[in-house]
Image 1 (cartoon, rainbow, N blue to C red):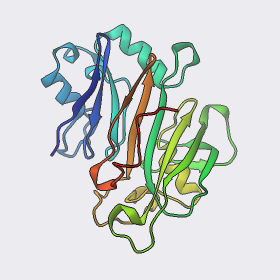
Image 2: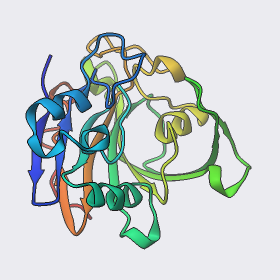
Image 3: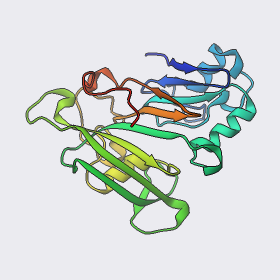
Image 4: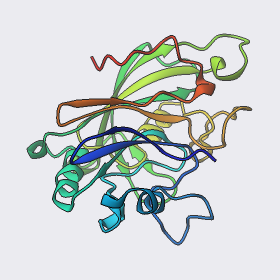
Length: 231
């Protein structure tokens, strides 16, 4: 299995490119799969003594891409707030790519309310402010009828607006009938080339004025469609 790689590093923090199939932190339910927290302790001296090896947020098991890691405890505390959307901590800007069931409008936005911490999050179109999650999307590549592989699905770019909620993109798109490919929890279409895990990629993050981009999985065939332009 592919190891994480470092996409960017400075004096205070770094960004890893997380492969699919890796847990972020060690728990009693890690089922023998590799764990980023353990990898950091073994490979980066600055992270050995930090809580969760300096991880400032988490990505789902199947999600690939940008994962922020701090090198010092005070930096981690600040960046955790930035990753959660705290307006007092220069919130991070996070952009994802997703393979989805075809048919979404070319551009759109949703505002939903997310509940629960079980394997599957519940969604509602009304609720309390602390459960609200907002996303906007735009179509990057429409599905091609009869095409093999990833080309049979839409590729969308998804931006989180404000604090992110657990499974916000996965549960939100499923709410409107367009679940992520291979997302068994939310009814996604099975993809022969997939991993059995939701096809979601943390493509770009802007933090402390620095933008870091993780190339999407090769199997998505997006090499000629994407640039590093964060606009």
